[in-house]
Amino acid sequence: MNNKRKILEMLAANKISAEEAERLLLLVDNETESAEPIKSPKNLKYLHVKVETIPNPNYRTADNGDSDDEDSDDNVNIRVPIALIRAGMKLTSIIPPAVYSQIDSSLKEKGIEFDLRNIKPENIEELITALEDLEVNVESKNKRKNTVVRVYAE
Amino acid sequence: MIIPPLFIKIKMVNNKTNINLWLPLFLVWLIIAPLALILSPLVLIIALVLYPFGWGKPLLQLGPRIYSVLCNLKDLKIDIKGKDELELYFR
Image 1 (cartoon, each protein chain N blue to C red):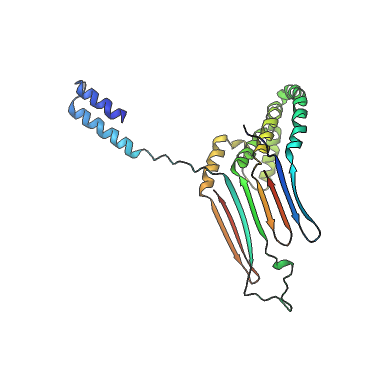
Image 2: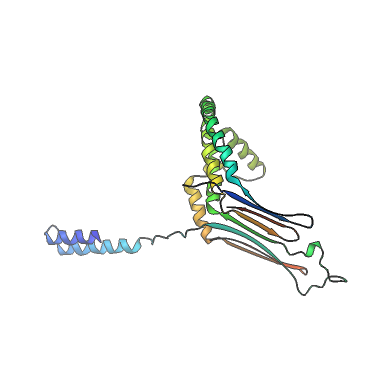
């Protein structure tokens, strides 16, 4: 908006011609249109990991119908504060340089080409922003029970 | 000011035990805080000695980083329900 006003002021002061002003105004408009809208990151607070096991109602247990150990419906509900993930990832900065090389060689032995020194604070922020879009849904069904695993951030 | 969790809830339920505790973590922090203050000059000297070997900076950052992790433990909840039940909740 300021740029447009400046152009108009310059035109009014006869510093530029009407054609030049028109061209500059078009440029300012194009710039405004091409600028990406700023994505406001949602205020993520928690990462949830949920595992729900529901016994299959169609499955009949033997004899008296009592459920055995395998049939117990296990539910796991883990809520991790995002701030804890951020703080945990920053712990990499306290790893002494000598230990880095040991970690790197161990990772390479396992076939993982990853350098911990490459993790920068801005990468951590990017990772946390990306969690906003993360949603993992795994559904497993067998004759005894149905298991649903959900990982998401909110 | 960010402060570490003041309580931890521990709940364990199975055939034999039924434990439901709210442990006052702030008592632990009250013990650790003066201890950390007393030890801080010693840590500083050790960090200065080890600085040429590359261990100084990590040693100096150790305290604040661990404190940050402890503070952010607040609201961490682990709840496992099945045949046995286990709940950990930092509050």
